[in-house]
Length: 145
Image (tube, rainbow, N blue to C red; front, side, top):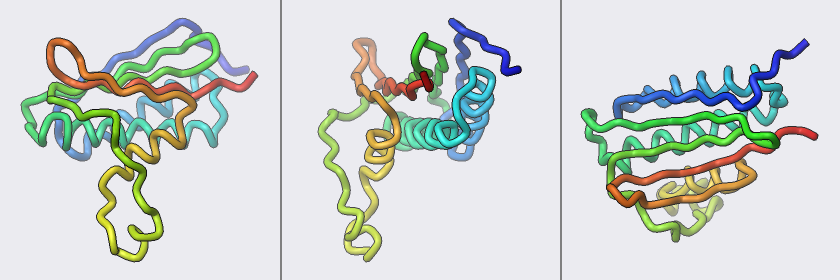
């Protein structure tokens, strides 16, 4: 029988070092599995966590290894919520969707592809500039009913 950890939350803080997004992915998979998320949705969760964490490291924190990325996983009654925060200036929520065909044909660079994946795999996404500096991406993956 699957054990449920309802109303639980986990927070990890990572240095902005590429490769460490794998730690966030592993944590997200374990957290989701412990809370009963379906395996295909766990893969979606891992992807959005990896993309948001990588974006926070590269773009939000500008590749500064001394900056941190904070990832929080929270079990809500109907979803797993993940919040990824960086210490950078963030970006406006106007990133256009990339042209997948042009990317495949190497006619366009894959800028914005991570945000595209996040928007298409998560059930809810919000981007926020934080008042004290930094940027936050809030994502939810719905739980099966």
